Image (cartoon, rainbow, N blue to C red; front, top):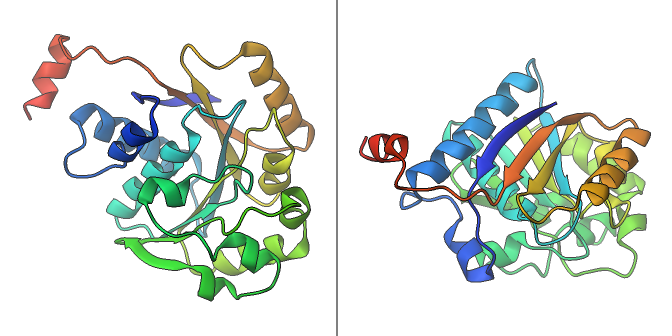
Amino acid sequence: MATFAKNSVTNTEAASRRQVLSASSSFVEIEAYKTLRTNIQFTLRGEGCKKICITSSASGEGKSITILNLAISLAEVGKKVLLIDADLRRPAIARLLREPSSIGLTNVLAEIVTPQEAIHKDVYPNLDIIFSGEIPPNPLELLNGAPMEKLIAEMSESYDYILVDTPPAAVVSDACVVANLLDGVLFLVRSGRSNKDDVKQALSSLQLIGARILGFVLNGVVIDPSKKYYKYYDKK
């Protein structure tokens, strides 16, 4: 297992919105996600759709903005990407993008709408998104049913990557259920915030069900712009 990237992320919701990758993002942010993208591409090689979820040990550590920006970064190099917000307890993707989430994954899993009716096409070029939908009373049961397995299998025929945001693995079992359907898990650890025992508990839960831990993303790293290497590359 490897530390795939180090990302500088702040705490407030407004700051998180500003950190959605764009042409105005800093050099350090863009390069961090390029590094993450490259490591993912080398780790999951071969034909067919690559299916990945992200989790952490606790809420508020930055997993949602990380998986969103990874999706954008993969889409920027021509990969067809589907991002699914499967954090049905505290969904964040729609909020980060300021998009409505009234119809989404919960509607698909309850078989109220078809997947095609829930997909938001080309939110960014090459990037489609299924938002969470309304928060249900039974998220674990929904994620653990046949419709979720069917959705992943069906979408795998149309995309190069399926990225899934899941709740923290030390808090609830949702991430373990979803990980069983995918090729691997990215585990996010926030500098100065993640608790070592919580991280161990989350990893044990994932390993117990045979999930493949692809690597770690170290989040919340403070980047010193006065460093010479930063100044050099930032002028390129």
